[in-house]
Length: 65
Image (cartoon, rainbow, N blue to C red):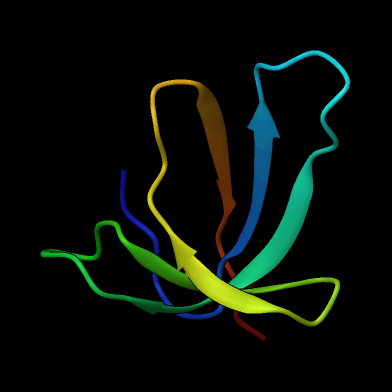
């Protein structure tokens, strides 16, 4: 799994009833471009994301103009 700054992410939980979270990767702190990721979530919060076996992280790469 690789993500770079500017990529959009969607984290889907495998737990029934838990909402998905959307955000933008601010920084990939792993090597190379791996987790953990510093993400600014759409609700305005920032935090590190360590994708786990019970969640799905979808990465949408940034579009170049």
